Length: 83
Image (cartoon, rainbow, N blue to C red; front, side, top):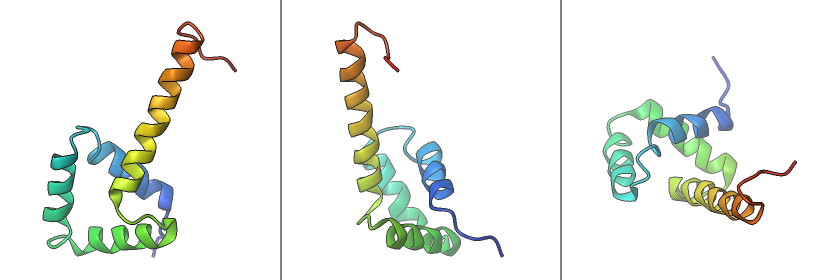
């Protein structure tokens, strides 16, 4: 049996569910999928446990907070990332 990888599951959620960035659509997807997809529900529960997040929204918010910080950094530097 393959071991559970938190980062793989997060990447899956990001690419498959967060793409639209519309919270109501993402919420509907989770609410509809969890009761009918036990494999997904199990992986989601394991992800919650291992990360300490209370829901997918924690990851969503952290991603877009990071994105906003990056935008601010780029605009301060005249559109350039400094390394």
